[in-house]
Image (cartoon, rainbow, N blue to C red; front, side):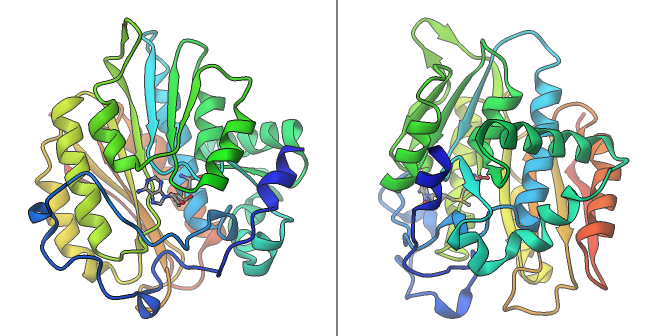
Length: 329
Ligand SMILES: C[S@@+](CC[C@H](N)C(=O)[O-])C[C@H]1O[C@@H](n2cnc3c(N)ncnc32)[C@H](O)[C@@H]1O
């Protein structure tokens, strides 16, 4: 049974995406652009998404991902989606890992008991119910499952994952779905190798790249991700790009915002949810998505959803941000 295999993965430790205090010495000390091979990345490999599935960061990312997919599929041309850091594709919220952290309880579980008024949140909850109908009542869909759910029969999805166990679960989950290819490889290298997308004789003008790294290498990961985006935009400029990032203190992200604003995309949108004030540098107080070349009116589609998430998932002092770093022309 699929969920048993997803749930059976026991991590070496419970990791937080931004557990700065436990970070080892940096893997390299030069700025990323001076590294000999820009597209090969050697992350620490402790992170297991099974511990964090369905938390507030997943909720934000997956609500936005579905909105992006739904906007892109309003046009008939086939799409290609690249999920550079795919994870296991589906999780069980009653698995040992999820129960140990309890993160889903203050994330998706708070929404599952509601009848939301907001369209984007209803859309997200419908997708979860679809996943649960297929895979069991405690299932939680990861980004590969959501992409497969939201995209069409003529669209194609490539999922990259470095951990063999997660890649194995992906292979089993999508064994019957010929639209989905699984790559046991570095997702950043895949941006260079797989784009612009070409499958047989088919070329894909439109599509989506989701970059959702574990940030185990702390600030280095921002450099790595932005370098991959710079390269990828040159190779596939018309795609929509989504980069997820954790927020401890917003002020620490100023260099990232500046660099993100300078990326050569037609537009750059920030969408953030802080579930508590960003006054603690030790906790992940929220998360955000940098969305490049956002589909038309994505900001309008997300506005009310973001406010509803703040109201439902946020503690005292929670806040949101939906702001163009560069407005579409
Ligand atoms: C945050 S999780 C992905 C969650 C998934 N995108 C979702 O929303 O359901 C990050 C995943 O990336 C994997 N990973 C870490 N570094 C990677 C790399 N350089 N290339 C591909 N996968 C990587 C980790 O093993 C982990 O499963």
